[in-house]
Amino acid sequence: MDYGKELMQHLTEAKQAIEKAGDNKSLQKVKNDYISKNGIISKYMRKMRDVPKDEKKLLGKAVNDAREAFMKAYSKKQEALRKEEIERKLSEEAVDVTLPGKKLDTGHVHVLNQIIDELTELFIGLGYTVEEGPEIETDEYNFEMLNLPKTHPARDMQDTFYITEETLLRTHTSPVQIRTLLKNTMKKPIKIICPGKVYRRDDDDQTHSHQFTQIEGLVVDEKTSLSDLKGTLLLMARKMFGEERQIRLRPSYFPFTEPSVEVDVSCYKCGGKGCSMCKHTGWIEVLGAGMVNNAVLEAAGYDPENYQGFAFGVGIERIAILRYGIDDIRSFFTNDLRFNRQFR
Ligand code: DAH
Image (cartoon, rainbow, N blue to C red):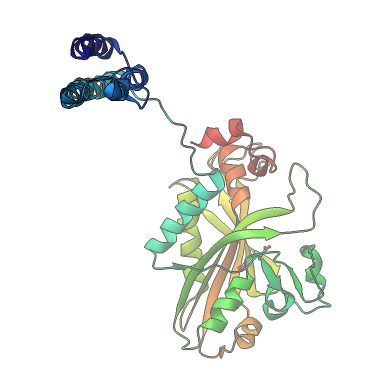
């Protein structure tokens, strides 16, 4: 029997099978069929004992040649398949960079933060810095050092969430005044605003929210006067409600300021003639302010003989409600996107 001829025959078939293999898996199968331990070609090694001695060498060489030829064809095919695969992937995953992209919904700044940002920008332009304080505050900073001792009737103005007898959720941003004054041991001039959340024990309804937002302002130095306060508030009113606005100060009462004022802005709807917006008075109340009470300065270690200052506190929701005609304070917090997106 001519093993050499048979081997050539098998090799030809094997090469055809290699050529036909369409993927790596079928290529591996061909390899397995022909040159694994029991493969068609390998098996010829076992025929060694059947051949006469002088032909053993020839058979061995024939089998090795066949395997070598197989492996050459195999490797070539493997490389071709690999290239094909890359080509396929490249064309399948090709990106047309000229196609219009998908628009991602990115969200936007909440209307309350927009107003805070606007006011912050104004005050930074006037040389103020921004201070922050904790929302969990001590009774001492929230009330006592602001001239509101425990028995003071004005505490009733701010129904309070107490955590313990001495700690509470701050009812206003005014305690940041105290923190700032205490921190300023060098008694340098102070010009700060502090935006932040405040809390009151109110039942939520259209006009009440147990959580809302304020910006506090505080200026302390050796010469600040009520007219400085008025000029500052006028700038703020115009920034919020338009360049034509006027303001007026009405006497009021806050324990931490003396004198205290309530600030009205001329109605931006009717320009001051009187309309339903301003209840036909021409004026809309927007915030509280005053000259820092001597008791507050003293409590924080400032000599009222040498230092004076003004302070103001403004509700951000109130400004937004007025500016945009919002009829329910809860809209700011329920996060209905139909509401929020109006302020994009
Ligand atoms: N803290 C006051 C409140 O929440 C608002 C206020 C009034 C703040 C007068 C001030 C001020 O700084 O001078 O009702």
